[in-house]
Length: 442
Ligand code: PL4
Image 1 (tube, protein in one colour):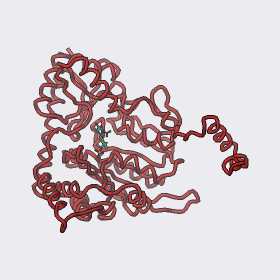
Image 2 (cartoon, rainbow, N blue to C red):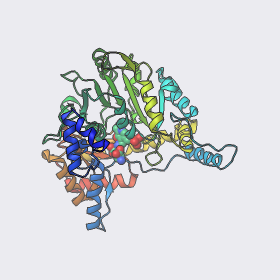
Image 3 (cartoon, helix red, strand yellow):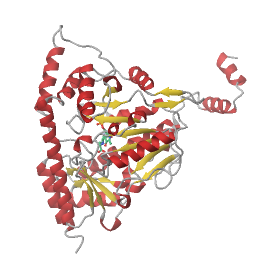
């Protein structure tokens, strides 16, 4: 008998025996991660892309305006381009060439972030608590590597789908029900009735994703709201995963830009930030995650364990750093010229949001968001299902948006429009909306 076969026969664990028998039956094929089979349909954004491509193929003359996926349209600001050009030149000379950089990011960028995003707002975040990465999408998914599977996780509903899908992938959930909600997750409904700010969970949860300014609803969290969450996390031993990808769009001076503006948050919160939307890096890729050294979890036997070294270990083992050229570009976001130029980019997109909001309101839509966020969240007419509204808008006005149900069950009956587009396209979109809908409310 071979060593492998022998090992199979001596296993006392019936699950192992079952597994090996199945492997025998299928000629010892590699087993898959079956959690992926629990995922409902495709990932939202490729699904929108698929439907739009099919429409464009069938209607090649249609001038489709895309307000669906939140992707920037305006070029990188000149200060950033200049810094990147300089960095390219450095890479072309033996004296200044760089190979692998520190996985956590170059000090020049980590220091600039600590100084400008945190110290300037009174938050004591040290440069070595900042981990530079190639995107918040990856970071919000990858962070799950360092947490136990038995944690109870709460998500806002509707929500950026990455949080839910990555929890399904790692095996923290059961199957989805007909509404698309996965067994094992705690959903926190965000609707017009609660002004898109959910109540605290009724059951104890261990990890909570919060996204402010919110994708998709455009809601923001006041100091009071954030304090409520920080207090909850501190009293329940929970950790908040705070996604602030749209922080730069906050216009209300009373709204905190970072969760660390709340006392005690640096003991319970991890914050995700991105250069994608403030500086136009969606195609260039640069972001960062803040893991304060004071944030702790526990081992199964109750020992306290800091999260920072775990994330440092994960990041340095599975990631090889963002390109030097890109990090120099990100550093330039904090230069005087970079600050001015990125501020005018944000102003431009917020003006787009205002044009969309006004246009929709003028024909009677109930509209939210778009003031401290680049997303408009509207109620579909007469409670129309959100994918039906998507089809109607695409077929009759050649406009693409994102169906609210794609963000979660509580998003049904809502629809998201993105303000990331050229001014001409946004104005044309409003004309088409007015033509298609006339006045909804007489
Ligand atoms: C489509 C709350 C957009 N293919 O660019 P990153 O990775 O630094 O940031 C991604 C991200 C992180 N956190 C929040 C976000 O909303 C996003 C980007 N979301 C959208 O339309 O909702 C782009 C989506 C992209 C994706 O799958 O992320």
